[in-house]
Image (cartoon, rainbow, N blue to C red; front, side, top):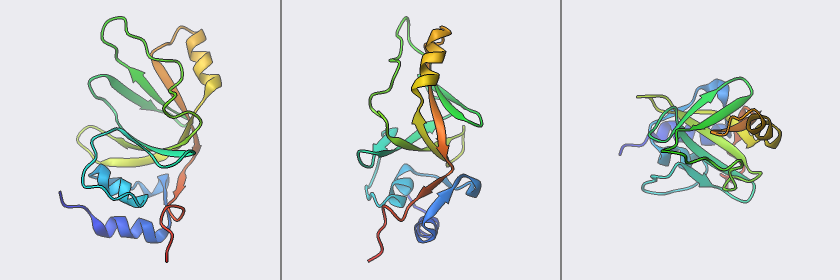
Length: 152
């Protein structure tokens, strides 16, 4: 795997990534490097940075999940096997701010913003009988990388 060191260093030195940058990365390990996490490989769809922040690596569509995006929310849609339902709240994320990098079909991962679970919207959907979606409310368009990359 050939990582784009130049791109990684550019954003680390810039100190942030903004949605308007349309920053795309081929590999999850490149994204993790932005946050000063150095691993040789990563096959999971997420990474917990600390008690308040995490990173989600999502694809527009895979076997069990699809996601959609609008101006305010990113929705995870569960495509369950049989009668299986998803939990109302994703306890894995809790109240963390989630930096989401989303991959379109046959494309690279692009930073789409900072999100949090929205309890009010979750209740609204479940009350309407929509029990296969989890909404994440957009709370920011910029992630500051300087927090994770302290220059010595």
